[in-house]
Amino acid sequence: MIPITVVDVRAAEDLVVEVLRSGAIAQGPMVKRFEDAFAHVAGTKHAIAVNNGTTALVASLQALDLQPGDEVVTSPFTFVATLNAILEAGATVRFADIRRDDFAIDSDAVAAAVTDRTKVLMPVHLYGQTADMGKLAPLAAEHGLHVVEDSAQAVGASFEGRKAGSYGIGCFSLYATKNVTTAEGGVITTDDDKLADKLRVMRNQGMKARYQYEMAGHNYRMTDLHAAVGIPQLEKLDQLTAARQANAKRLSEGLAGTPGLEVPQVLPGREHVWHQYTVLVGPHAMLSREEFASALTERGIGNGIYYPKIVFDYDCYRGHPLIPDARVEDFPAAAAVAAQALSLPVHPHLTESELDQIIETVREVLGA
Image (cartoon, rainbow, N blue to C red):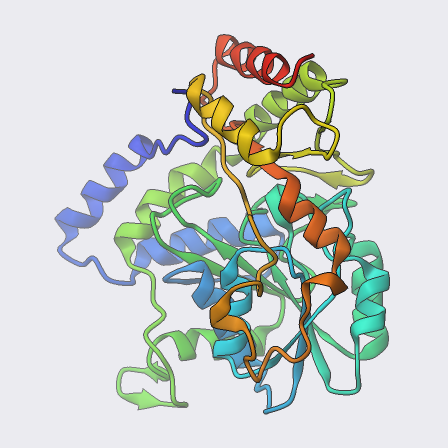
């Protein structure tokens, strides 16, 4: 089986051992070292490490002091953490439909969704390519909205040279399958000194210094062990990203023209870091998306469906008071993509023969 992803963190062994031998494994100097390296990658003044990507989203919204009834506009096609974080922060969720070409929120739909209660725009940079920040950032500024970027899958991605996570508040995941992983972890990026200070206090039970409490806080801390795992990956991120980009290019060239299959695009001005290589299995394909996925699995090609439904289309969210009037039919682009999206292996450890095997198998299964 060619896996959909491969996790290889062996380069971190020396740093992990260093932390273990130190006897101090909680948040400490290794976390600070990781934060400095991450801020450099994101092009921001500050990077605040936390214990996971969901926490990054929750803490960012909490730091904005949202009030009951305040709204966050976001994508209906995303991992559930996006929605859960907004709900945990006590905000009302409003969705805006996506674009099919980048899988991200559409600026025209955002403009239509904004009300006088909207306080935050939360674009989701899905699969490793940013949303159209050239339109979304000015739109947010026009309406006086905070920008909180769900950059969970987009470490190192950029729009016209400006990095994901640098448009206001950036929220990254370091989960095991991400392009940079600490097993579990997250990062918040910002250029705002006061906000960064507030987040650092918040993540440490509200303590400015030991037993000097400034606010009601939380334990959102990252450990030095986790930071040690991530540092070597940041050091070679350019190399790992280049491998993903080369693999994606090879896949797109090889799969072009496959009947019923739409390969992903890299849109002008954007650097795609290819967390996932996601194709669309259209209605005229020989097989349905589920049949296609099964056929690939049977032939040893790992794949994944990210994501099978619009994010709120589950019983646990139906009638939720903070998700008013959300109906699947109001988001036709997101609904179509959710029914057609399937991801193929693109990780940096693929060999040339494995790439050939993926291409040949996909084309064979779909009758090319």
